[in-house]
Length: 210
Image (cartoon, rainbow, N blue to C red; front, side, top):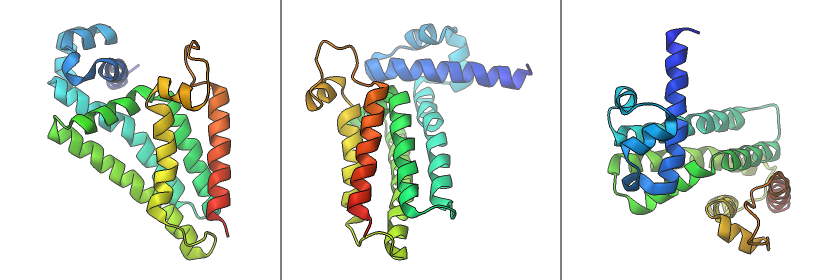
């Protein structure tokens, strides 16, 4: 394994561990020592790769967002499928990503609400704006092509993303909404993924298609 690849693997190890620590303790509550311990590295290595706790936090945001942005762009630019199929691919992508990275999802929403670090908040809002723009372009493309009804695009996005946020931001709220026994450890099962994807696709198909 070459040194560059080894370095990248170590950096990803730190980013993944730090995401969980920040999500559970918040930015202020997480110390560099805790972040290093969770990543199984020494403090000097975190300083070497990131320079500061805030830079590590910002890199977490960028790290988790790059894949989503690339995937959304690929979906939006496809010409071999219908606009409804693009919406379906978008739903698959969003649900899979949220189930895999709930800690990151909680983290960015917590950061936006607090707005204590302007550079971080600015980057998060720009990422959300970019994602919204790509999703909006898919729905508007369907309307312009005649495949979709002339719907309220912005409120359609609210219905889609609002459902996801309501379920994924809190395990306790998710259990209440879905009538899941509070004693169960986690509601975020493969069965929930199937149920949610099926529901959202059915909702969008009935609402969007003429």
